[in-house]
Amino acid sequence: MVSAKSADLVVATDGDTKALELLAQNVAFNLSQPSLAKLNTKRLEWGNREHIEAIKDLNSGGFEVIIGTDVTYIPEAILPLFSTAKELISRDRNGGDQGTSSNSLPYLSPS
Image 1 (cartoon, rainbow, N blue to C red):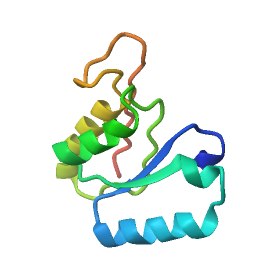
Image 2 (cartoon, rainbow, N blue to C red; image 1 turned 120 degrees about the vertical axis):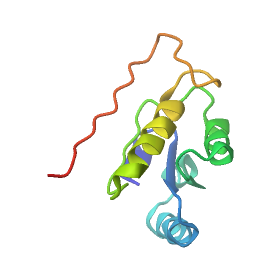
Image 3 (cartoon, rainbow, N blue to C red; image 1 turned 180 degrees about the vertical axis):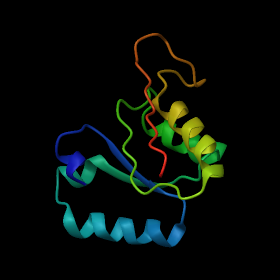
C-alpha cells in the first residue's frame, strides 16, 4: 500500500480468493484518494494464463518493479513464480524483451 503513494499503478495479488477479499478490504480501509485509485487487487495463480493476461491488461508495457514477500514455501512453486514474474516484467505483450528493461529475479534459498 505504501507503493501506491509514489507509483502510477500498483497491482496487489494473491492466489487465494479469501486472502484477496481480505486484501481488498484492507486497501479500502487504509488508503484514501488519490492512492486508492492507483491500487488494484487481482487474483494471480502463478502460471495461470488468464490471470497473467488480466494483469497485463492493466499495464501492457509491463511492470518496472515486482515485490514479493512470503510468496512460497515449496520448491516446486519457484519455477512457476519466476516464469510469471518474467512475463509481467516484460516490455511487450508476447512476454519478450524489447531491449529496454533489465530483468533481475533474485532468489534466496532457505538454509
